[in-house]
Length: 284
Image 1 (spheres, rainbow, N blue to C red):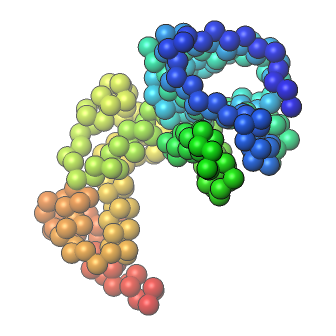
Image 2 (cartoon, rainbow, N blue to C red):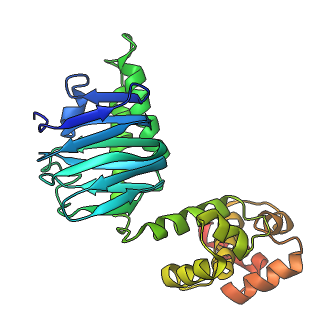
């Protein structure tokens, strides 16, 4: 499938890695026209008047911008842009640097056949997508690898990552992306003593606004949502490991075992010890 006529304004400083069907025949199996990644620097602007493919574009860092006749969208870290075919558009750099990855897919391909509207989604697996594309580029440059099993595995991983991401509900505003990213970081550091002010600062919101958004998206206050994350992780560790309960309590942010046990019992109706025993019996 030939690419639609388009205009490129791309600085030589941009660092691009691009693969098409002419480079890797295995892409055609999944009806992928092109995939690539780029660190856009200084100048990056691509305009397409009538693209005949669906574009999936993920932003890792920095910011880009999509412009169509109807709207402008900021492309911020963690977002996955779903851009259907036949929509005239311009995609451009909107910050000092912008790290992105993309796939152009034939519109009747199973992965995108049901996608008819322009959407901005949240993509929690973006690093896997970038690693897959980078791996394909590296493999293509090594003569001993093109006919190995590496490339089909990397392509399969790309498809799995995108399939999982397209299951996510579309995000109707960029605030949702920023809130979700904050709680992803919180989930990686549950032992930290989080405050609303700290979390709000990470999302570049005021504390009251962050509180309102949490109630809107999670039906919980920020600190209530942190507790929910802590309890969910505690349940996973209690049922999946034999670690001492004191250690689990500390890992999820409770230095005092009695405080952890009280909170756990209040939310789950049984003590951590009883919860572990119950799940051990179920798995026996």
